[in-house]
Length: 185
Image (cartoon, rainbow, N blue to C red; front, side):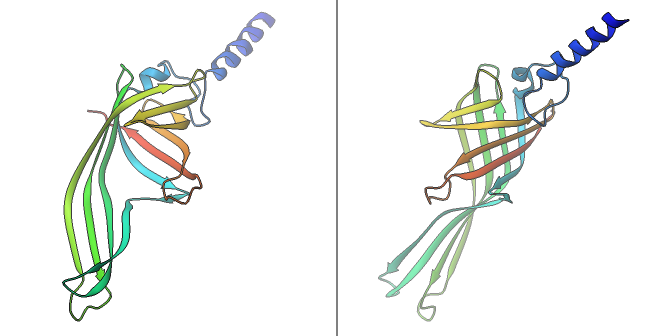
C-alpha cells in the first residue's frame, strides 16, 4: 500500500512538472509542438491591459498648397480577422484583414473640407517560430524582426502569449498580450 501511495505521488509530481505555463492544462497527452501547430484566431490583442481593435499607423502634420493651410493626416487600421498558423516545419503565416481609415483634418475648413477615406486591406507575414529549451517561450522571426513571447497558456484550443515590445515609439517596452482560439476546420 505504501509503494502505491509513493508511486502515485511520484506520478503526480512528474505530470505536474510537464505543465510549462500557468494557464496550461494540468495534463496533456499532446506535446507542445503538436498543440501549437494549427491555425489560431486572435480574439484579443492587448497593449498595456487595453484591448486593441484599432491601431494608429501614422499621424503627421503637413501643409497643402492647394488650400494654403496646414492639416493633420491620421491613418489607422481596424482589424476584422487576424489569424496565425503555426506549421510543423517551424514556419508560420500571419494574416490580418480589416479596414484602413485615412482622415485628413484641415485647420481651415472654409477653403478645404475635412476628408475621410476607407479601404479594405489584407496583410500576410511569413516567418519562422521556435520554442526555447524549456518550451515556456516562443520566438517569432519575420522580415529580420524577432519577437519573444512568454507562453502563459497553451492547450489544444487556447493560446495566451505575453511579450514586451515598444510599439508606440516612446522607447519604453509595452506589455503585449495575445489571446487566441484554435480554428477547428
